[in-house]
Length: 251
Image (cartoon, rainbow, N blue to C red; front, side):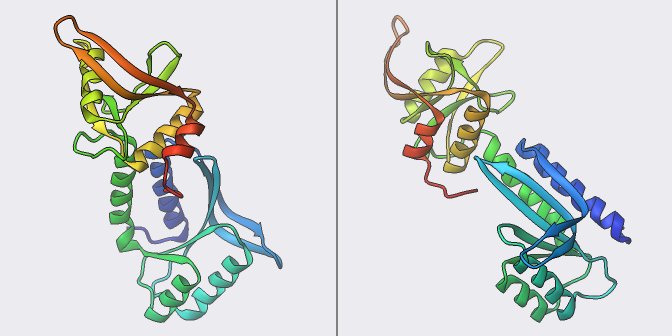
């Protein structure tokens, strides 16, 4: 049971640390820090900064460990600070519920309100969400590509098809299945999976950080008799894949 302000802040920091670990992002934490706004300084319980797909994000977190529901004056004070600090996301956590009016007021001003009872469930949901972004799903439909992953680790892989290490993406599921079969080894079995837009965003970020190319395969001709693959493949930089095929504004 979290019953002190410090313990509550510890829980929130642990919560975001776990999300950072699952998403393989580096997050910078600041506890009880002063942030300069447009009109002055504001004390914020927890601040965390992270980069995702080349964009810097900042989240301001207020942890209210009250034995009562959050009232309007308390919320108004945090809203005023948030309005004064632009270009950030804002969250208020509380072990108690939020009154209807304070919560509506906060949400109108772009603040997310999370009661303690919701946090643990929210953590599990977001963890599953991040896992869905990172891990390959054999049941997914390609948007528009299909990729190759290890059966054991269920993670994206890089291969060298003559243009350096790169991530294979195919326009057709059948082509991805051919490549998975061709590249599989006894100790390293592969499978084809659909790359959703959120998966593609992650792969682009991964390719940029690891300096990988993409092998974009247009089509494959497969001769089962002598196991010769003839393929049309384009070696492309992550920026080109992002510009031509990624349709998400953000995740």
